[in-house]
Each structure stands twice: as C-alpha cells, then as structure tokens.
Length: 92
View 1 (spheres, rainbow, N blue to C red):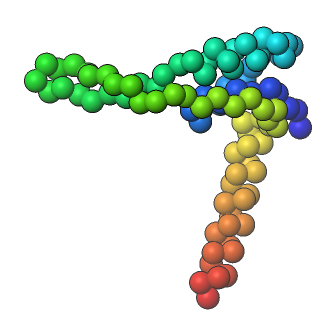
View 2: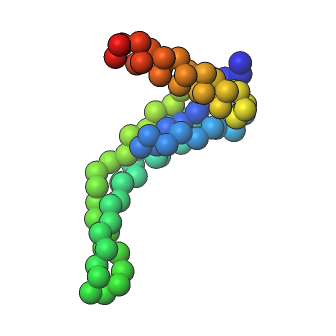
C-alpha cells in the first residue's frame, strides 16, 4: 500500500504533489490558515446569494495510505457485509 502526503482543508482531503518539499508544505499550510470560511444564504428578493464570514479554516497535513478505487470499493463492501452480520447477530 502506498502513502501520499495529503492536506485536509475543512475536512476535504487533497493529495499533494509528489516530491513537494516540507518547507513548501509548511508555507502552503500557513497560507491556507489565513483563509476565512464563507457561508451563504439565498436572498429571494434579489435572486442572489448573500455571503458571510463563517470563521477560520482547519488545515491538517498527514501521510495517508492510498489504494486503487477498485480496492477501496472491494474493501468497503467487505467491511459493510461484516458490519451488517455483526448488527444482525446483536439483534438476535
């Protein structure tokens, strides 16, 4: 199983370019921490969105294991079947 360096911004994870230096990753993470998350509400009178500040963003850098999409689907299905079997056994 391969691992890649990833960055998570408000819970959405992105793979970083292979070979990106630690210094560049630190600079990127620091820059992203200066962002402000934005929320929105729709204004039906004006037919447009109103935006508001929704606080800072969370940024996390980590090494994440990576499998192929097919492997992930297969492993996910197998774990779902085991989970359902456990739940069924508990309910009896």
